[in-house]
Image 1 (tube, rainbow, N blue to C red):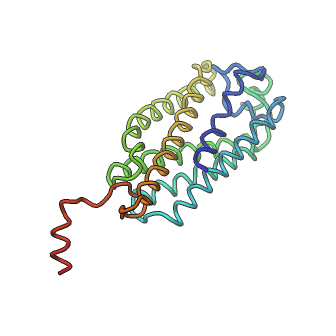
Image 2: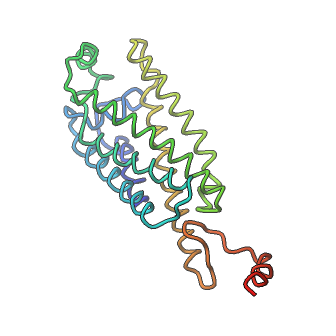
Image 3: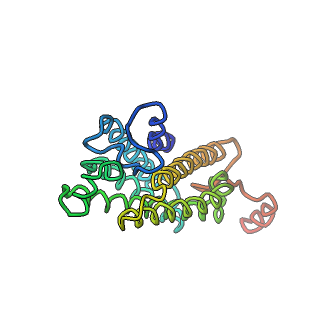
Length: 241
């Protein structure tokens, strides 16, 4: 489910092959799914699949994995990210403000459908959920010895994701203030791409942990990849005796 969400969440790369009429360096990623775009239905569908898949993965983890604080925080945040992404797909923009001056003017004047404001809220919740999940699950991986790939790559992805988010937020503020787009589209696409990569890394980590736990002679705690420390065996036997 995590792999499916990673692939679906980065479906915007299809614009390299398909003619969308939008400038990927300047346009919001959400504009690909706008109601007036010829391929809007395709991108709304991939957003829906991504959100449902990551929500299902998070709920499955919450029901079946360990109950330690950082893990719980991370999976709940990932569930928020999934639910907000589903909401995004159901609350599309009506038009593309970065490429349509009339749309931008209507948006500034408050003459666009309420879905524009609702989409901004759901997108903000998705970003909060994504950043929280990335941070909490990376801390969990390093503190509890879970999901080794996440522990190794997570800190680098956290730093890159926060920088990309700062770029996107600054560019959005500049655009809304009438100061240009500041390559808004490039910043958002980097932000989404890094989240997709992190979902794939998490999927790999979860699989590695499951395989380690199911290996003969392995008795790992739920959600962890590390086997019992051999040096503690004599002490444990003495306590049992």
